[in-house]
Length: 261
Length: 220
Image (cartoon, rainbow over all chains, first blue to last red; front, side):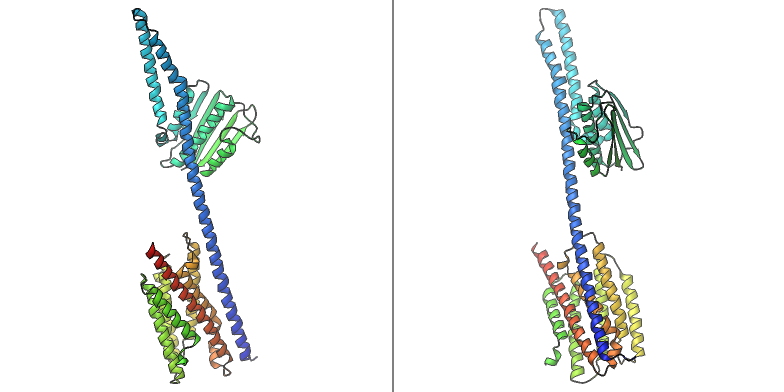
């Protein structure tokens, strides 16, 4: 069959139009995808800004918690020691040598205790450096202060933990979560035993804080401290997960798992 | 005089002048090279027109000569654009060798008498693939670029529209030559004119984008 020049001309026009329309769609697609890339990049930057802001907030909270402990310690302990020292010194009767010597010895002992307490407190004040010595050291110091309350039997098991060299951001958040869990126990759990288990297996850090307190109903909204939502959100910031195992009267076990290092 | 000024030649001259104005102070030699290439295109078009319309001589040899420079310029420019993402010197060498073999064979086969349109078809396919690869590199790139002001993007758009759009004309070029009614020849002429307008508009806009980029860098 012979094809006429008119038919070939029509064919050339149709093919050319199709071959011109195709690049229009292609270029539009590239442009559209590029716009999405911009949006994605903006979202990534926003997430990074949010993360930095949250990190700053966490660091502030760690400092606040430290200052709170410091204030309580100054008021309840050192303040008491110094008051006792003042009372002892003012009650000295210089004519009664035996009694004066006894009171002076007692005042000296009280002053030494105050000095010791202040030295320990200065360690706590140096909170910013606390995490530079590692997560274990920070937790140990926190537990050291907790043990002074003499209200809890504390167990800290860290045998299966291998500290990472450069995960300060993660350490700060894990430490802050630990502080908040302990604070919740002190305020609401009415517990007598606290067990802390710190482990690291196959690139995962696992922190378990267990108490024998009153427990709670998981679905009931919590009015206390950070709240469960914020704890989960903070753990999520470092791709971590939180698991609560609790029931009224059964105590509480909170397991935090974080990719590590 | 007006025989030298067709839609295509006017588009080429405007693009060349835009290039000279926008690129004469450009820091990149590759972009400046485009001006020399456009000058060559304009000169050959004018000479070809003179040979065909005034001297009534065949001008296919002249356009074959232009084809070599067209291939060299566009291939090199693609290589330069790819280099910002990945060095593809081996691809450039392989393609230039393939082109040389194809072009020489076709010229020998035709006794240097007709336009090497089969090589043009191969060249168009390669340039279309190169354009698509460039889009792929843009999409894969982490860095966001405002494409409406991105000169390489507009240069590649022109190339894609021109070489992809001319597929039908190139494939049926053999038929067009033998068509005594000249209907297909006229249609081909109009399509090539449209494609030239698209190509040189995109390139002119790309030159303007380069100019704007240079001015913004200069002021900051």
